Length: 340
Image 1: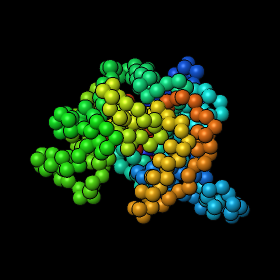
Image 2: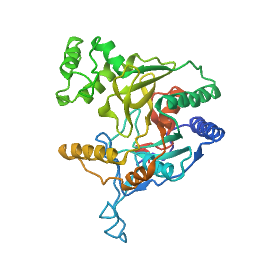
Image 3: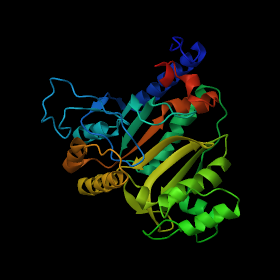
């Protein structure tokens, strides 16, 4: 029998409720409009690393129901796509605290259903948005009597060079690093090397960071990692960093090794975004993965004109974990997956 009792104690639920209230007060003071967008969508992200839950079609749903020809829907993995449609229509700063769903993700830091805080700032790029994230987080840390220290910022190029040696990170739009060199470093350090990585430079970079960078990040402050490879741009613009190197204009924010959020200087080119989506769908098909329909609503909004903006998605449960100094997401969720 499934236990009926909530997993998180009452004091933790009160803490999370207070956290939401402080966030909403900060957003209101900053004139960032709170919005609500659909949880169910005709489309789902093409991202190779995300799997969405698909619903059964309603019996009365017409078969010509947009891209999902059988009338099924997808639970959102992020409210990003409909929020960008609002940005294209109204051009004002917006935020949302939303339930989101990701299949196949369960563990100490993952629950298949979780809460995301997402917000967008008109006229900001990813650099300005890092300041914005730090301002909100400083407010939260001080409100909950946690010690606040100035965040650190590190370029991914520089981190690769620190681990593998000067000049290891590429300076052009070719592979960001040499997979053979990464593998040699792992073997020299007595670490196992998964054969599944093959010649995938992005997978090699992610594993290098997981093993040799994230464990060393300071536990008492935020760290922003920026200047990611162009191949990991997703929905971000491409640009150059201060050293003139090609990068994706995005960042990830961590507290220690715990990833809390991911921010972009948002891509506004509908043709480029469609090409990226098609490339990801091709990779999914090659791997035998389900290929959801593209979000034509998002692409239409980009074609109509997305204002220059930057946006960030923060895992609210993970943010609460960092603030409450707990190690398992279940300690902050009333009914995690097994009790839902």
